[in-house]
Image (cartoon, rainbow, N blue to C red; front, side, top):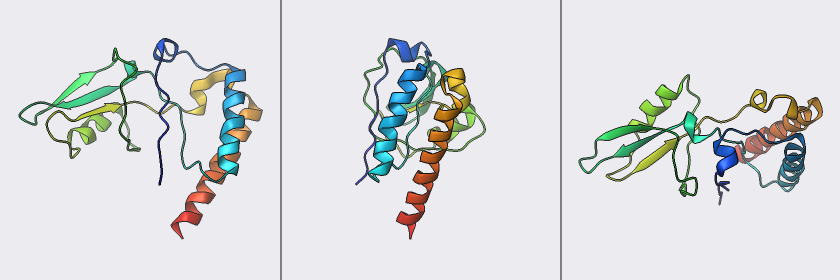
Length: 145
């Protein structure tokens, strides 16, 4: 069984504050332990909800797009898809076609890249991240066999 551990937003993350070098180093160490234990399949930070959108299906099952930011960072997430698309608008279009019924809701958020962390993600941490990504890819290949 796989699980998504969704770290809930707070005021700092919703303001777009990036983690410090120490926070990134601590998370890298934790992620390395997860990878070494063979339990980490994928993990990334999410951009603030101000960069996102939701597609809400009204009572007649009509999709309505609502732009972020969202005011309740404590909202739960039931699952996620990872899409490789060219823009936020393209992601919204895919979400509009999602198989959700009335009242269904999808929140769309950009996945942060190494560049978003700026100087806090040192060359050493970038190297550690690359090693982990290689280990994750190797594990996925092994699971696919």
